[in-house]
Image 1 (cartoon, rainbow, N blue to C red):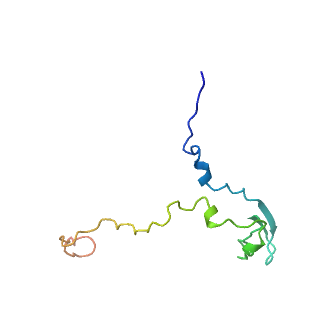
Image 2 (image 1 turned 45 degrees about the vertical axis):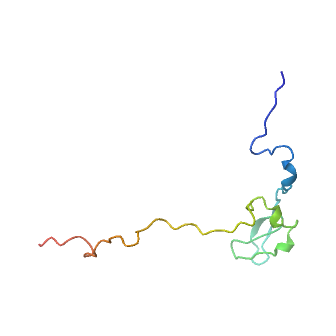
Image 3 (image 1 turned 60 degrees about the vertical axis):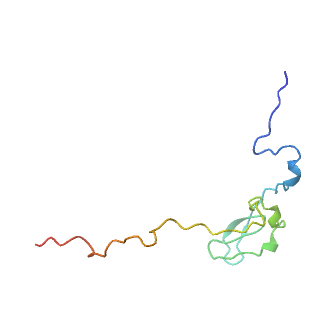
Length: 111
């Protein structure tokens, strides 16, 4: 008896792999000293930002090129669709009675 497996949601069916972009290589954790204050900092692929003084090196100084938007795995798949604004939450209906303004705070007790 032979057993066949069906592709899961994470595994595309045959022929669908041509449409998927190649996976990006994992970033490399790199370490250096901040050029402004000397704090020991870590970054990804040679791109750094110092949390002490705020210094940031230029993105072009990295060890690898940055991915394009088409290579971004988190980029929304739907293109060309116009984005509609989200509907507002339900509020008071037009023309509905509103409570009359009353005194602020609890009612006076008469003491």
